[in-house]
Image (cartoon, rainbow, N blue to C red):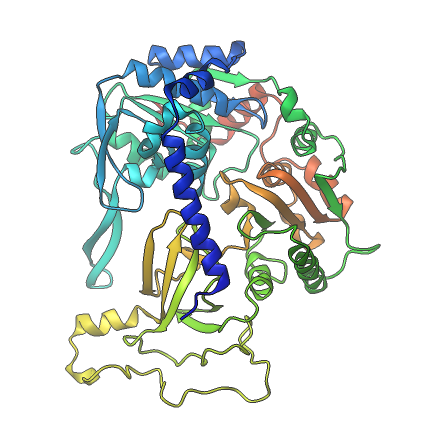
Length: 537
């Protein structure tokens, strides 16, 4: 059977990526040396490198375009030499395999953010050996499923717990926390518990970005306890980009500049309702796609919300219909959730981007029957034809079982309750393959279409073209940190779908008060309970 064209393209890109990596690994020592020699650090960057070499824990912060990544590469190079001969056993992301590597690590909150960090750091060929060292905090701690007896529910329940703790500690000498503003206190406490005394912690971040969804970030606490290196120089090559100039305009309360790489689409003299704006957005994306100027693998739509007509759920359904129009659409029931999916769809699973490679009926499912899959089934659960298509052989009731419900044990019955109506096969950008059949695997928290994301989910990621939707109904989310974070996700182009009064409101409204580092630290001190939170061993 011929593969879906979208799927073929995805697999082709995977093969190209592997080839590119093989070529890079074959680079000569001369090329590696030339990369290192081309780097010139400013005074603040050099200070950061010296602190790293001294073994002290510290914070490295800076706005977009101030050279945090350049500093981080130089820090890695110094630490690699400093800790020569000292190693740690790392679990390879997404597998159970392990590898012994240098006793330094860079961690991020999400797999996407870790992947971006890996690309940026390993741009220096001499640092490619650190590839397994750049991972998520959860993978570093080797989170794994564990069953325990839930007294309240009176049954075995699964939870994820770290295998690395004080009884099985991390042997890394230095931990760099990339985008540390995203790391919340509960995760930090698990990291801290697993560290050996004297472990060096380097907190890297941008205090102007969004705070975590739940509670304060560990970066806020670190800024009140540790030495701080603030990168202040915005490099000329950065300011040549209208995107980065506007990022700084947002922080400084200045109007936005329009340019070929930064467009504002107001949508007419009066902002339309959400549904009308959604239809206009979908038509625009379709036009760009047909012209070859929009690629769902490189570009993204960001919205402040998940729900309503201009939330990510609705946008994803409309956009999936554009990029995968002739596919067979499946209705999938996963617990209380009902959604529509097709082979070839771009998805996000546990904060990692991938593609759907197969969808099949789950014979263990015992719930309400789902609609029959069809090319005329819309992403909103309605058939395009007047007559609904019904598969008479699919009654949704354990049809593949040759036993009766009475013969099943209590544990088997409990297992059935957690099944989804379909088995969804996916392949992630890493090449990992998964078969998802449980309602928990397909919950909104773990699984979604990925043509549109919330700004919170987009932190730590980068795309070529970022389309940012900010409707008047999003007024409650129109604040400086959100707009700045959204704009800085783009590498080549930003399109803002918003009225200018909404953008002006966002620019002048701050969640984190103050314009200087001192102001923000005072704000953190006034709004946090500092007792019992330590940022160094």
